[in-house]
Length: 205
Image (cartoon, rainbow, N blue to C red):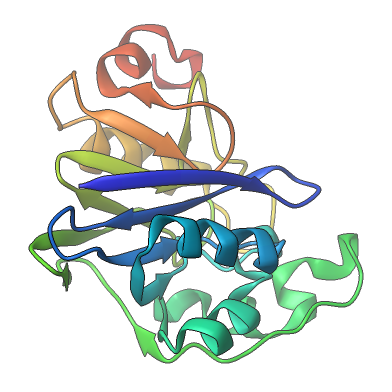
């Protein structure tokens, strides 16, 4: 698997580009802002984008959806529970940053779905808690956790749709079950591993 990361927007969200190393067909994960920079990353990587996947519907993860879809022709995928959040400014909390262009998603993803790009399979894992529709993605043994699990922290749950109990359950029952060496790529901040989060994350003790 090929992997690129770009930190975008005033909230420093991680936008990832992953692709099959053989076919260069790939997925943009969480294009939250700075569409031109994301598209340059795609162009420089010479990747053909098959899907745009949002781990959840907050503005800092969906803000560049429209521009990236227009430029690549790729459909936008999100869990249906976050549909309104991803397509309507008030629900997405975009009041914090001003006017953004929002569009309806093209398809809905849920627990157990498998996305194929070239020879790469990406598994969808439902991890509600930060939002009702939060998902994580497993690709080539690596986890993309959105705002569910961070290095040394977890996603906030004091926003609409959040639930601390659901979040901790999602992390412990859906993510910490992977081998310790599994690399975690969160929605904000540096990468980590499952082993380090089990050992050092104060929210998971």
